[in-house]
Image (cartoon, rainbow, N blue to C red; front, side):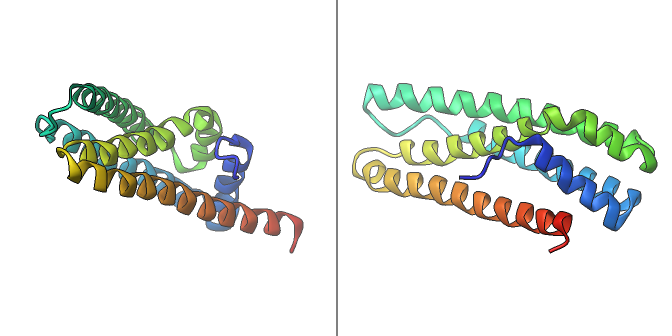
Amino acid sequence: MPDWSNLEDRLKVWEFVKNHDGDDELNKKTSKMFEVMTVLSALCCGSLISLSESKNKIDTVLFVYDIIRGYGIISSVFCSVISITLCSLLNATSNRNTFSFVEHFMKFSNIPFFGIIFSLSCLVICSSLYFDGIVMYITLPFSIFVISYCLYFYGDLHNFIYDVIHQEDTGG
């Protein structure tokens, strides 16, 4: 299982970009990443807010639906604020100072990543809990599969990127 929270490895990726692509590209790529995360957070938040009241008639399911939906909305807003702030400040930073800024904000960089993963997971689960009866029971296992597969997919690509970086570091 990859260590997604390893900030040192995450910083090595940005250092690799800086060394191979230059300061201008580092600024563009980090800004673009947080722009995308801001849009994704906003879309997720809007989707969770626009979900109408669940059609489910089981009180416990309605309670869980509302809690998951609420956590997803709050998490999306939190991620949007962090992403917008980082994106704005990155764009205000000179290209030659971008890596220093990246080094400083690295300790906060996991917040948008994990928050968006959490918000999207809430959205997927709420999509299943929205329905009543048999439809909920049929879609809920698929929701769990989708979340699990997305985590696997992210983990696999995460490992690939870090393996490429480490091969470059060791000259392999």
